[in-house]
Length: 240
Image (tube, rainbow, N blue to C red; front, side, top):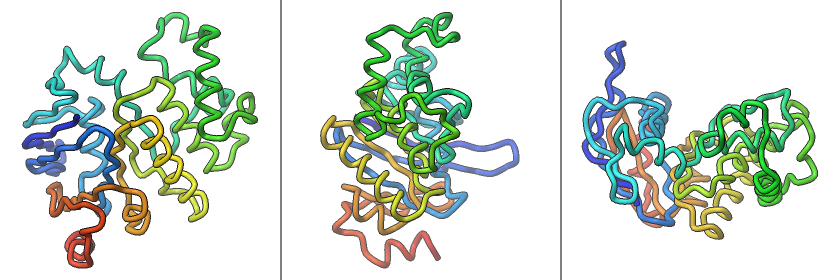
């Protein structure tokens, strides 16, 4: 489904963010990436959907190499959930969700939020999936942190992606809200068969919700194991 081969990324500062990463993810898997800050987790996710340019290596989605020609199609097939939510505060919840369709709608019409009735119904359905239908016409800045992240998830799933990339989706949330978001992602993974690649810091959340856990340290994978095979030695390897 997703295959990454010898992926390398260097920044102008001299930082080698990714050092020949190889990773394969199967359709329908929920894979979490654990690693300390600066390990390359965010760079890896952003490289998959073209938010970061790579220096060397190859990325394949559905057996097709991601290049400049295929990238727009990849961006339609992938959803992204951000740590800081990336919502427009003065927009309603439903309009924030509808921005998830900007790559697949008329750019002129979407500039003025002139979406079709069908698209608005899809947005409401996405909000119902994340249990926020009652907040459809509330402004984004009126919502709690957990609710804002659920809007971010609704925005990511409205285009029915094959792959969902979640970059530290619970980093700024309390434990109760974090578990709610992770259980929601797991529900989406199982009910809609959406493959999920999720960056996390929280070991307990990774082990509770993931099928596999990948350890990343200094831009290189240190382990790639099914959740039941993870042990203290694996964790100690990345959190020294």
